[in-house]
Image (cartoon, rainbow, N blue to C red):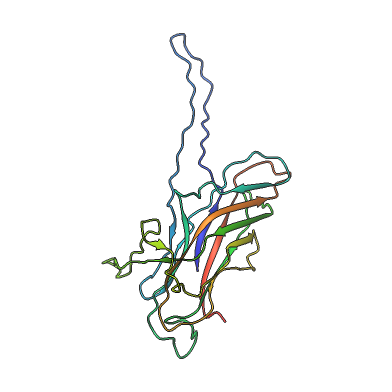
Length: 246
């Protein structure tokens, strides 16, 4: 199971101090706080990647900004998704061993798999939750090239960055694997017993699939915040990649 964090956290600072009387020779001073936060463009999975089925990349974080309290609901678009800040879902299947004769017979070369998602409660530091739905929109399936560079310490592949030139590109005509994609995924916060299908490879094949990628093109958060007095709220998306889909 791999996880990605959904967070509306913002960098902020509050400066407090005691009152002081300035002397006649002093100039009055005021301060303006300045902050900056850096994040990874996309989140790399944990691996192993070589000879394995992996969720190689997933969106690292979704940031929906800051809003004034009041009103019955807000509909916010993620502010950290753009052509300069692309985020991806990437599955790479490098399994090269035959399916086992017992247990999960689809867990082998060319086997089936399924990627699902669910979302925890959107809540603040006090535990207050707000009814929330998240919709993520994905582009079509493309080819992802994992590459062959190996970490000498682990012996595992070092996955290519999907934002590097030529790493993700359209499949040649007739070469795309049979992978179903839900282009608009809607998650309801707190419904952890409900997993929504995102990508599925239903049919086993005799050859390795390689890599498939889909770009997260936009994300929208609908929050019912009537009566809420304000605060930072955060949630988490859990991505689950499993084999043996019937």
